[in-house]
Length: 68
Image (cartoon, rainbow, N blue to C red; front, side):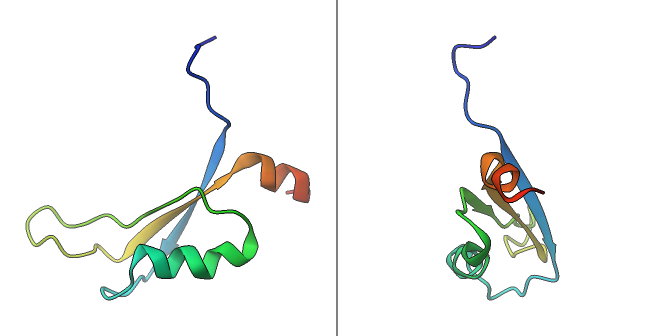
């Protein structure tokens, strides 16, 4: 076992994210369903614009305690 263990997380894939959407906006909206660990909105390598999807990361222990 690694000495650098972290609590396990789970990631939610979200499609059709508008270009003007900021990570803070997604954190606020999805924070209603539980504590958000991280929000990642990938950017296109060449244009540096959002690619239209995002990942919302939640702690796994939250979903286990909810019975999912």
